[in-house]
Image 1: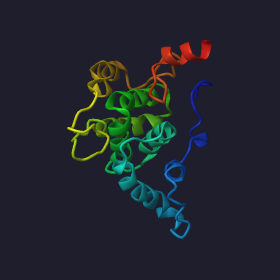
Image 2: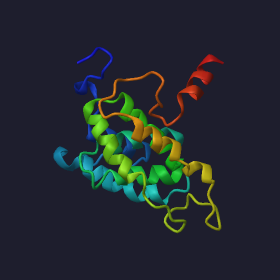
Image 3: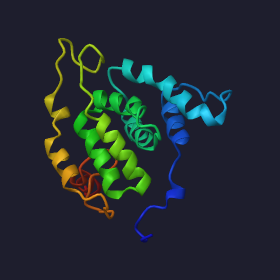
Length: 181
């Protein structure tokens, strides 16, 4: 394994990711649930509160993306992707997933590919209070064609790049600009 690649043993588990989402939502730990099922129980407990909120705190974005990427079940990673798309926009979610594809471990890349499919979830004004009254939404939040083009252009065996999108969904130029000011 190359030096710059991530050590998969150092990566968070799905349980630690869902526990962080639950902590940020103040849902409790479900300590009485056996550890083997605790992650899925935490994910289930978080699903409804995530979709019911008109906006989500910024600190929830990275844990939602991590939980989606680390969710071993492709049927359920949508539970984290969908509320992130509604609250933060499809574009930002896809940029974060592209960051996992470009700089992640093999497991993270596989998880990002599963979550990418879910990021195409159709948005409905009646499904989330994230829409303004009358069902309007800033279209820039969901413009993703250039990100999808970049996703398609990347080979599956990628090396980490310091110029790729960041996992918080911000373009690298924004991060560099803010760190130099």
